[in-house]
Image (tube, rainbow, N blue to C red; front, side):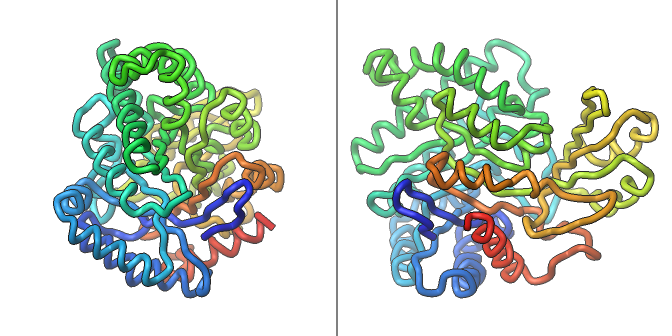
Length: 398
């Protein structure tokens, strides 16, 4: 939905909360779930869509002009407008183990590149005039997978190819699209500092040369194109996970000239390290997603585990840990007390002021773990839960 025009600000929710890898499944979720959310949130307004299109669905849409036209007709008839795609998960994302496979194929591969270019073509065909489009993606790779300089060169080459393609797409269609690398715990791009360093020391050095080589546009124009078409998907859960201040992080990206392609509004679990806190986390152990854990001591020492079961097994041997964050997205409206809380309180009035004043044009509520929330805490109907997250967000935005 359009929240304001100057500077522009659009709000959506990420449809990765709904299972489905084929376009038929995705389209059914739009018809049955997204429309129901619209009726609760904005029945008389145009309603933005934050699509999740897996590689299977992208291939089906790319191969069929009829499918794309049918979807566009449906969007127009129901006052829906897609302006963002979650292109992070390539394959299955529900109903089975995902874990670190969500990062594969990564940005070293042609598979990731080709999939992202498909998404760009699809979005450009559906995007309204005068609205830019965002695609969020893997933050290069899972950190343990990147070992050599050849790995890094492959990542830069493929990201430069996206920039060159989106530049040509803008020239051909008049539609401006940008790709947002989404820093995430234990990935190649994890913290704000790492991500800014990657942009400044790698992309704006080696990447500029690659874009220039592909387009023959000169170094200055190549740098401008990178800044226009490649940025960051700013996931508030992931930033808070690192014990970073979300306002300071947002300002740091802007000061570095890095585009905030999209802000994903999300909350992680935050627990006190005590037997009571550990017991409250046990129901969140589940086999589908990777739930990274970041902890710190009163003196500021940091600890990390790749998954929640590993952390729970070892925490009794870390008596100096004071608090820990768990990468488990929970609804923004969750209000927990005692030993288990969430990071939603990091989304302060100052944060929303930055958003309203032009930090990004795209806001996306993202609580993809809805189906694996423990039964005792589960909010019930998915449409009602998403509508409550909209209400929470709109209240915070004033």
